[in-house]
Length: 635
Image (cartoon, rainbow, N blue to C red):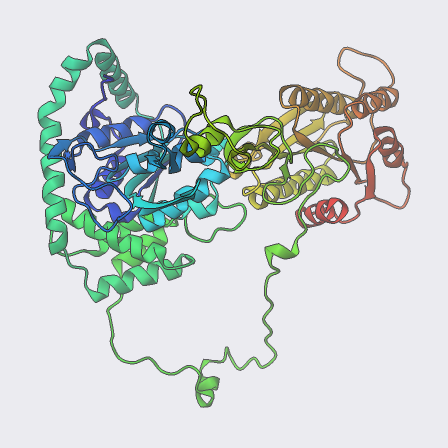
């Protein structure tokens, strides 16, 4: 049996431990999303919580962790004795199939009895326990939809292979993610009650303590666990007491008004945030053995509830303005039940008109749907259809997501076919009897993101800075727009004597913002080396990820004046040769000519022709213009 690192032995991470405990006290909060870099005890804390919680009562032999029959007539009758068992902890694999998660026909039982018998999946196993998803941001889309339904309803309904069945699926949802590996779909993000950012301690003393405890645990797990057993017992008892005290906690109208005011001030869409702050504040009050929720409880709760829900500008990090929140907490509103004035009364309109400005006009922002999706029409692989930008239809390989019935399968799903035919029994030779309507085919999901690689001229002075700032804004905007599609953006800048990959391909807006803080500009134009580095970068990606769809966007005036490193050849000839080499990768390329002035040398069109690239003269250089150009030309 695997030994679990004690929850109480974790060093620091107070917010994380508190958030997990509050969900144990009040599971209706909706779970925790733990967001942070690698090696910050995310999974250790989640597993430790399950081991910490008091055991539950279940009926012996039940596969759904029930303690009573409940309103589920399709499930087997409970006939065993009531027993005590540890809180279920279910680790959801990223590559799990729908059958494994939802449940499916019990093949062995069907062969033996000739009847359809349901075999529960992971959602049934997680009932009344913890469903843990490591790297939840990498979870396939087909599993996300399943989890959304179960998390929202508390039940799992299965309709497949001639069966219809509903079973309980109430669980604490705990997910972990590393922001550098991409964002999370907003539909799933909103389902997590709380989000906690975790980081490795910066204090050398704390880091030393973490290492000391971890080494002690690995050296002698039993002795280490025994060392913390009494403290763990006390914490478990405190959780039980807080859970019992929760029903006595009150939250008055003044505090409810404060919650609404905070959510309004931070422009949070919907009412789920208000409700979650309400639940979290009550659980926090119960945890601290108090009876009434205070403004401080609401403030602490808001710090965990709002960051992943509030409406953000494209380049903002998911953080709260803590000073503004603190000001609202220190000056809570007083509830007034006086009926509000009817603002529809046109007689009182002038009282609310801003300084009598009769000519004031209001303009609405364009809807995201009005912006065309980026499509790589010139690229044979990874053509965009719907959903993610580049789903590969008819994929022969990829993740086996589900099976569908068909008369002529070309990729037979043996498991589903045998389950469907199990009710037919066996022939005289003991072989399964399979009819045509039992045949199933595998449906595989194989999608590839779009890599948008900017190659930007950082030589010169004012013009170079304008180019770099436009590319930075466009890169961040594209990442913000593309998080649902899992697209990536990379940036190569060239100046001085060589080019540099200043942003490795990433899906993370936060990482891009961090990496692009540095905007190197000035010097000469090593365009030849920039194309060589672009060639190497794209070649490496295509070698490692053959299905990768890539778009190269070059911003330059084409005035190459630096030879390749360790070479004294002609800079322009080397640039043209490097362009010819890049064309062999057959990567769609857009050349945006940034040359300005009345007298132009015209190297841009020549280079675009050598690159076999789409050419555009970009007179107005800004992030908006650049994004508009990408969407309009390749939309």
